[in-house]
Image (spheres, rainbow, N blue to C red):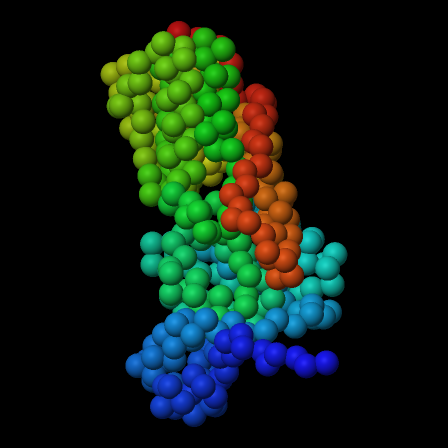
Length: 340
């Protein structure tokens, strides 16, 4: 039987790329594997050729000991621990090991995280930070490293697989709860407006007010970092208004803890003088006095789904995914009818 020769375009090889870049194969290999000893100019030239040629390193079957890597801003919060727990649980079930990379201060993130990832060659990546550049995305593609972004900061790129929570619905539920109790002056402390989930939570709050035909008062909406200190600072500003709020909804539980600090300093009793609703439901929320009413994000579930999706993308084509898991309002002791 006569077979026609295979005329499909040849898969680009390291030798071909090395020839086009006028460097050695070992230099191309160093770039691919994130090794030292290559000048910035040469590294950029090789990366460009890898991208233009459509090179993608062939994946190998997952073996025990293979890595799933979690890249996150910092590891020093209960929020981060919940994400780690979810990634670790799925990795362990698959017989894989988890590597953790902390990028550091979100305002001055380290840019060398990608080099470590290329060197370790994880089979999948869960990214919990803002702004994955097109260059980094291409580098991951050429190394055949699948990735999923948790709670992307900006408007989600349709080509960026991502998983988050129903933030709009969470903000809406928190505000409807306060309205049902009789609150009409509701302060909001939002996270940074550059974060999509912060904007979504405030949008849900605004929508609940509009449905109740209550005008949105711009002086009641404050913006700050997602920290306890920022929560206290912004709460003091809100409570110093001539007509202060009777309730405050915060961008996360850490900010809510700061509202408790501000209330204590001003001699206010929660919930008698001020109702407070947080967002996340990290473990310390239920240990406060009184325990915090908050919007629960299924953080462990989000991390588990992100890890499963990243592993699936290794072996099958997955259509572009933007998945949101449901939030739920957890009513505790920090909310009550307004006393005035």
